[in-house]
Length: 270
Length: 270
Image (cartoon, rainbow over all chains, first blue to last red):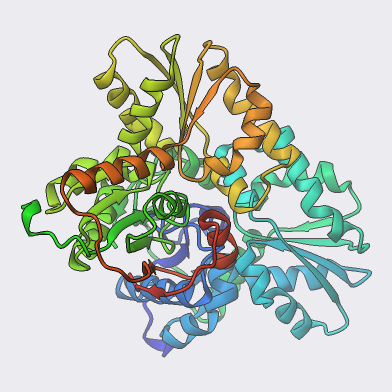
């Protein structure tokens, strides 16, 4: 199957909204010659409190859309979709699939020394237990403590990255996890890396923060190399962004995640 | 047109999610003999940060759905849809339409003495300027100060109704509005009435809080009476709930809004 893929085709990255742009950014930094198609379901975001069934249905719809765009690899940048719908996406896909939950789990396994790992994420991600399963597949001796943090996404979107309200919220959410003597904390949502400085302040310097964006960029590079799928075209890489809505403050928030100007945006009306 | 309506048909109430259940509750308390069909777009909630175009498209789809269910009146319980899409809903509807923005505006006009009124709501509601327009239609001499409060909905859904984080957030959002010497504050989102005790604490007792649920229940009663549309059947009233997803904690959150047990729920897959 992989034999048929064209190395000059784009990498497909998708998320429930703008958060996955942090993953697109990490991939573009590591693989500057690759073209990227990004899909953000901005009309139906957030996924983190939806039912597993609805999350799977929407993830399937996005996967089909990106496969029609002839992507050579699919990156599930949304932790919630990866946690709940990875199987459905994988079954459907004729191209390799990488996801942030697996990447985050691998990083956590590599980082922990005392084998106590914390995971924070949306309610749907945490309820799915996907991180615990993935981490224990790589190392069954690791104990995982999970904590849903539903207010972190709205706080990041409000731009309160260094605000007393966010600090108090973080203290409340993280207290039970920190009490478990963890040495590693997985940021199991693409919004959370923007809170790193504040989380660092709340947690102190003894706990390693795992952010899967860089890990997945490295895994993407390996995957392309192993399968001889690196883009060989000698022209500037091209980025295309598909969204289901251009919500209020979209460009401002999106550019905060992407770290550069957003252009070439197409709205898909679902 | 109204001549053809059957008084025994249900009242249609709709919202982007569960918040409009506070309106359904107020109607059921005032009009216990009426049947109610409630539609909550729980898969695509929240609407408050979406673009006006997407909000209108979704509002149209819900209106068509409820008209097919043969409702005798439509109640737009969502401030965001009322603010952005009232015209589209009204144009489409063959039955009378009442909405929470108009109801809230009328109440504010009746309550204010010094003619300085504050309005809080989602970003889409506030950006639409619908409250200012509606209030000034009834009294052009009133000055309206508006403030978007995007974190209030997630805080209510998290259940942090009496929490220091919510208190600090309210202080920050309300400071500029209170500085304008308002004597009346419109709670321009169906989630906000659950924050009344905390808002009362932050605002003191000098500011009247306007919550449109009771006003719209009274307007519904008047409308039915004037058009001889009161339900005359001598059987217990029936409630049906249509939602597009049964998200995590749906029943818990929904029952907090409705004030009674939620049953008779049908999922519509959009």
